[in-house]
Length: 405
Image (tube, rainbow, N blue to C red; front, side, top):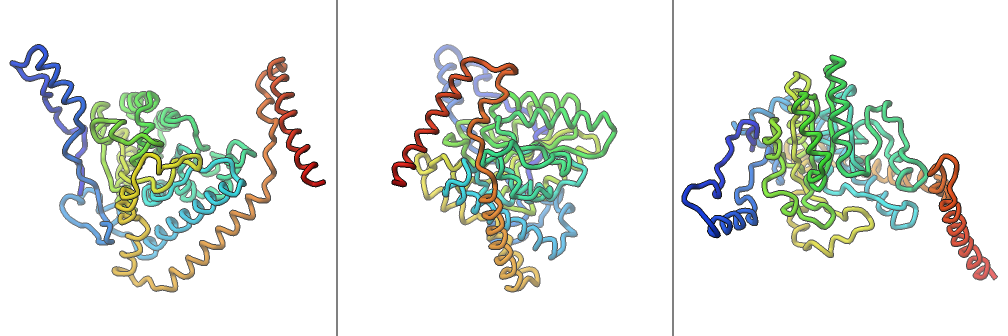
């Protein structure tokens, strides 16, 4: 079901603005209103239900044309993208648990949002990711093993951003939205018809950088799509602690459209992102897309989600699994046979083996690199810290030697 552009919505009159309310009663009303989240949840753009049924009605009419000609082979391609991305992600998580990576940010459950939006982009579009867009990187042609060097600590990003128009991962929360906006403003000045996509999460939506990016993009009519993956949790902070209105409605205050799409529906994400990108190419400015999805795993491998959320929440979202719903559609509405799924399983296992081999062949991180280039001419305090760290590292060698004896 579709959501109308928030730019076209009329503001509602607040309860505190009513006449005849004075004194402490007015203050009490304001407090009650401030504590109460929006009751009515907005409708989703959804083209494929959790049961794998295609939705076609008047409410999806604005987005249906963007996937109307999709073929069975293209649907299988989307399915393959999601399966291989999930397999890569699972392997990276295992490698971190084995000590081969220092950290990993899993995308488990967000495959449809990333593959759908990633496949909507053109080759000449430019993408600014966070640190979790492994599926978008796959769509942009970045070798997945190149994503792992940073998480192993051997480089700051293992690919040339200009080779794939896919920027390096950004750890600083929300800053990439400003980078994307500035780049999009440059694209407009160059007269190109390409567009820019900035990815961020629901937690990042509270960052000042994101608000600044919204302001600049709206005022300068920048050809940028802000793609927010609302996975319900900003580490341990739920979305209701981030905002009192649905995230997509924030676009209204900046003067451009906002749309909420079922983030577990790969067709919906593909169609809505194509729609938003076409708006940008026509010179109609930015769009905020909120992909309503769920982080099935931990925020990163250093996080324990069992400390702040219940298992029944995850179980409810497992029923909306993006891969399972597309498989149901392929099996019921196309000529896809079991041979396709068997071949894909074998390809998936081969990818896992390759990822393991590449990571284990990477060099160990340089433990002393952190002390280099802090100051141009060196610094006494840094030298002291380096010596302390060297002594600490040497203590492990003494233990190893004793154990060897």
